[in-house]
Length: 432
Ligand code: SF4
Image (tube, rainbow, N blue to C red; front, side):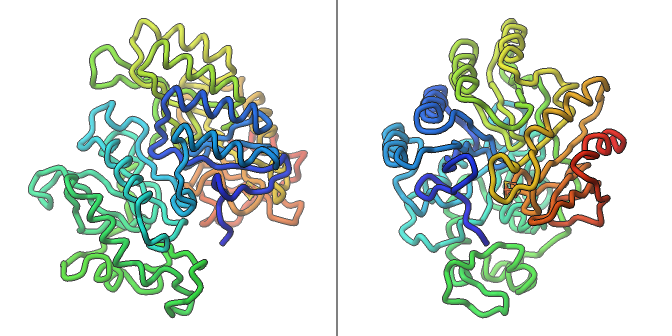
């Protein structure tokens, strides 16, 4: 399993080195956004990718600039001093957390968990591939996306009608409920119990090779739910329930009324999931002027501007449109998520970003009343999202074949329809 890039281990891409900056919960202050914008301009090629884990990726980093880049980001506390901490996957949450009606505000918990990870003196405590999401019970239902661990706020008979977090393992609900007050300690305990299983090999031995990073889905299939739950929560009668399919994942609307009176969260989308450095700078200016000097990266490769007063919405639309960002709900309903593609990644078979732009252009004549999700993936890895989309367009590595699939994710795809690069856009139009 290839390791994802971080800031201390940059990946070589076609357009230069790629640095991933973790942004816990996707929350960036306007000051941090400006630092990242400047870093992209100074040390990279000015392009910033937004990822499906609410990270920032700086592209085209010059090899002789890496030390200076690290120092700059360390000075601004944008990255961890710990190489092991930096390797971990980002912790994600509902981008509307703390702003709208929900059962539990998770924003502080995400920060606390990340802080706890930064202090772990056992770097091998868990695998860098392990993914965590907090869902406070708001309207996006972000916890329904498959993560190794999802913490879903619930309030029902099983919790004595107190708001608690139900633990979901690799998409399977359990009867393990954690109190918000001590959830961080409980999570660290769970990971401690799993520590001997890091390096778990395919033949169920405890492997010496720590590079075999454990994933909860592998432990579930190799050990079974009962044994895994006994390891995670010893001496508790916990059960594994059904797969978590009751709720539908919903990306934030372009305007969401906040619980605070007269405040609105504005969702903006980049047509390609990518920003130029001056767009990020422009967004920082918008939140400084109209918002709460904070912006949030969503796991849909979008940017949320919280706490905007209603009188300022029209002004923001205008400025965001001038920055070539998508503002209207009908535009946002066409959700095209794409990986870096052949222009940015050595494994890519076709130009995903250009295809995304052309596709938007071609479909602009249609009114799209309900969300249509399309995932363009230039190889089977499916970096842009692991979630199912209505349409998946994927090329096989080392092959000219592109296939169109419906209602599937990169890992669970059914047989698709083969198309050539020239037919791609017309075939997608026909399907939609
Ligand atoms: S999906 Fe494949 S081509 Fe696209 S960025 Fe990931 S590895 Fe590269």
